[in-house]
Length: 120
Length: 106
Image 1 (cartoon, each protein chain N blue to C red):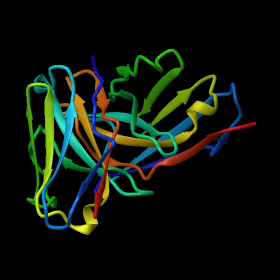
Image 2 (image 1 turned 180 degrees about the vertical axis):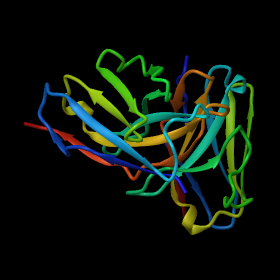
Image 3 (image 1 turned 30 degrees about the vertical axis):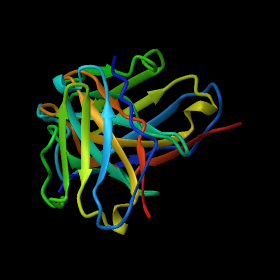
């Protein structure tokens, strides 16, 4: 049974870079059948898609965030990562990683979420 | 446009049917999924490919997608169905989520 687990600092200072990693267990990140996604949820608000990456390294980012986002995948470590630069308080959220199926674009497997607070 | 619109809240009496809509431009041309999220938990996939249920999801959850509107219906609503519900669309490139609907079981 595949599982995803986010990790990273819970507190980031304004203007700095937020870095998160999603470890994949019970399966391989190196498959063409899926894409690996980051989704966030600000406190009390809805879900926002951040972007996704294939094992090949091909990415697609939310246009509203794409100037600040970099995603990467490491097949040797079986994980994928998110970097979000120049953060502000508006980036405070629970960040989820999820596995997406390319055919129907749905997310069956989610991480438990990682709370990130942007504050000095 | 990838924007999806859901009603912020829906109320339903126990054992009655609840309907949650999701509107978006040419939504029928995209695949729609639905998720349930309880407080403090990760979203749970309820519906994929417009109307299909993953294994383990009760038959009382059903959905459709036509024109510019996708609809999630919960038949025989139970107290445990009280949660936030999100639609999500996929056009083979872009992911979009609706703003979410809080379902209250009165």
